Image (cartoon, rainbow over all chains, first blue to last red; front, side):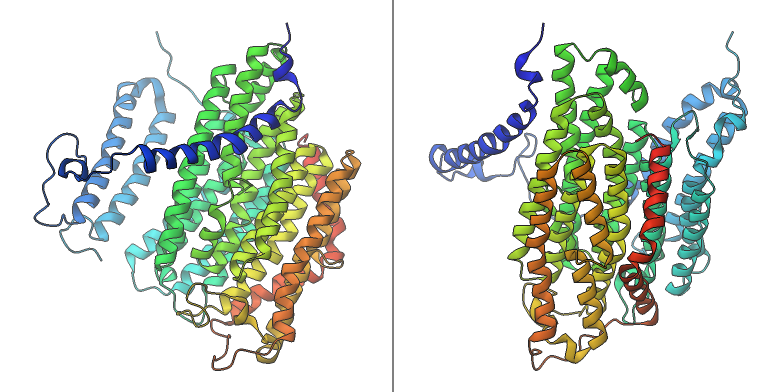
Length: 129
Length: 496
């Protein structure tokens, strides 16, 4: 059984054209129509608040130090390293010398990253060099 | 009882990994050097990067054609060797451009050079594999490094460019991952040669065709973003404008070479399998890209944006060669980029030497046409060289890009696409307008008074790079034949 439509050589072009010529302007027009005509334009307080997963939004009394983000980033980095090391440790004998060298290389690369972060002062508070 | 896995080093064929390992080790050496002594001058890092690139170049030249290595994930064929050589040569041209006479923010960080080397390793991984996952990893490594390099050029424009490029790149990476997932779901393999074998057995099933359609549309979208093809090209001019001039020139060559290699591998496979509409979509994209980008370039007021649109249009030219799927067509892709690389990097380097810290001519643009008005009176040599690059980009006979264009057209005619060659010719004629517009501004207009010289950034290394690009542009007629036969030999050896 052959599918005449899909095997036609110009089928792909047709779909592409249909997408660009019809779907894209139609989506834009629909979005415009909805936002202009169908939207509720009253400005009540609840509607204008930022959605924050349920709880009411409070204004942050102080700014958050950028240092937190660095620490979080480093934490994720070395966290993932540990995840990779557990299966290796369990199958240590199975993987043999090849696995051992691979893991040493892996740790070495991460260690350079760690020393780099340390030297640049990412682990000290307020002292990024 | 499980036996310990025993992998012999010979079977790994680690030599196939050597070029990337050189680049990664070089990046790490630069980082460690900075940790040991943070007061080293940027010249040292530039020279170190150049040295590492030379070693990398040698490592690539030492590879044998048609080898596999590292659990058959790495594939060294002619295409991968040529593209790696081109990536490294373009990088060698790019790196000395950081030795400007004025101090720029990004080059004071050794991280710039380390990230640059990691990026090259990423591109090399991308072109030396037919494993969809390794291609993805290479693509992401290179792209993430590139976003950072753009943002390091410390201007609000650059942050905008980096965020735009990141958003678009993340979207295209998502498309790529979904397309690969569909291919894996269809064939149970991520190695393209196994995928081709499975697909060729099941080509008569209608359901397979629909799934292939889905996969190839996703992959085409992903690569159209990366190659900045119409209608996914809109990010390119803004990103080029925000990036520093040499980086913009670099971005118009190296990531595209890498993306073209992967496109050749994937879409070449589809066309070989006889899926004709993939070829037609590529042709439509190619013709649309070269025509619309040309028309957009006509109305630009900024030279950098004009060059960005022109490089999009050139990418369209090359995409048309991809649709031919002949050895000649694939040769044309690499030949075109090998020639375009020197000219385009030279043209962007000319913008780089005239870079001002503040916008003196226009509130909106860094390099409006007025900036180059009467350049022949201010710096005659610079005006002549810029004019040479423009004539070459326009495809005027003795200069380099002309040979690329004529080769692409010849490949198109030989595969029976006469209309494609005619469209290409017409587009070259349209393109001549905006290249000549710059020449008119440089040679025939009076300089804008009350503005001082445009020699701003010039230094000996920059002059050397521009001189090299000029020689490569003018002297194309002398090396074109050996270049074609080398590329043709490499490509036919890898079976494309």
